[in-house]
Amino acid sequence: EGDVYKYYCDGEWKKSSSTKSVAIINPTTRKTQYKVQACTQEEVNKVMEIAKSAQKSWAKTPLWKRAELLHKAAAILKEHKAPIAECLVKEIAKPAKDAVTEVVRSGDLVSYCAEEGVRILGEGKFLVSDSFPGNERTKYCLTSKIPLGVVLAIPPFNYPVNLAVSKIAPALIAGNSLVLKPPTQGAVSCLHMVHCFHLAGFPKGLISCVTGKGSEIGDFLTMHPGVNCISFTGGDTGIAISKKAGMIPLQMELGGKDACIVLEDADLDLVAANIIKGGFSYSGQRCTAVKVVLVIESVADELVEKVKARVAKLSVGPPEEDSDITPVVSESSANYIEGLVKDAKEKGATFCQEYKREGNLIWPLLLDNVRPDMRIAWEEPFGPVLPVIRISSVEEGIHHCNASNFGLQGCVFTKDINKAILIGDAMETGTVQINSAPARGPDHFPFQGIKDSGIGSQGITNSINMMTKVKTTVINLP
Ligand code: G3H
Image (tube, rainbow, N blue to C red; front, side, top):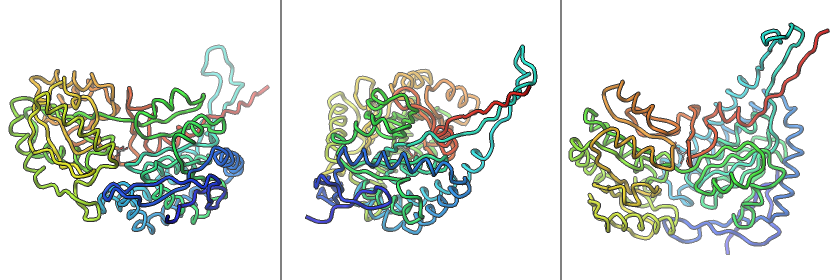
């Protein structure tokens, strides 16, 4: 049967009383790789209770001490990069080198967060009353930032470690406690990462990690009265969570259909390189992946040729061999991608390569002459399939971008900076990249989506602020 990884509660590794487990299927072998505990609702209640009490004393722990522990956790995380990366390779088929990069980036994020936290939480404001009409200088107002309480963090499968620490570190530096619900694919990587925080010596109960089935504990967690903030990254589930959650701050990063608008004066080699990186890294399984290319007709043939030549050079295979294109996360995901490809075929898209699939492994595919009546023009494949729509004007490109229900990032390629700024302003997305593919990092940059792409803004500084509340004390003078 094999071992079942324990969950983390009250500073200890525990078995669930359910005696049930959740299987994690290796996307490459399509066989069970690991098993984790299927926690019960009672166990969630216990975790919440402990998180609430642990937070009270943590909030009184000096800021510099909180930062010191985070720095320690960051260092331990980096020391453990090899075994954690190995889990990422097995659980989510992330190419070996990218898996290591994810862990190192996570360590850096935790350290930066500790530094940023001591700066921004180390100062408040002082206001006087006589600036508002009718008031004398009889009131002094002091502001500080206080923690929210218990933060629930739900990261997605594609960055189980990095998008977990991007929630954990800001929550902790700000004086909150943290309950982590890892994605099923990526759960063991998350547990290993939590172990690094355990080794760093955080107080018992401050961090918990519950694993299990979404159907059993998903809604129970997100609707739990003990939760004071939810930070979620993932797909449509986020929309459902936001409708059911209580009156608490929400940070949501959901899907995207990031457009790449290419003007006739663009450096087409630069564009092609960015389309490859943006569209095909981690086999397109990034919310910020380039998901539709909108290219001016006059340069479309040349661009498609350049991209085709680069697609041909992508290696396809297992993540252990550090292949560029690796199996997508699950069979259902591969089936969904295939559905989009078939629809495009029926409606007459030009296939720049032959469509090929073996198990969860899908060969990279560029679809030219995609039209708005095809599903792939609007839906996100979350796979290595990229549609190209030829446009006759920039306005047409902007219109397509803005007609999407997503609004995460977008990019525009041109040598004319004035045009780039104007197009960027017109694109209804949280971020516009000029002359580069969309990306979340560097991790201290603000990161946000509009419409169905999310609520709130992330990035280290914004996350710390979001996980605090302003408290004011007014001194009334005689
Ligand atoms: O999948 C969503 C991530 O936030 C994207 O992050 O741009 O660093 O790949 P990334």
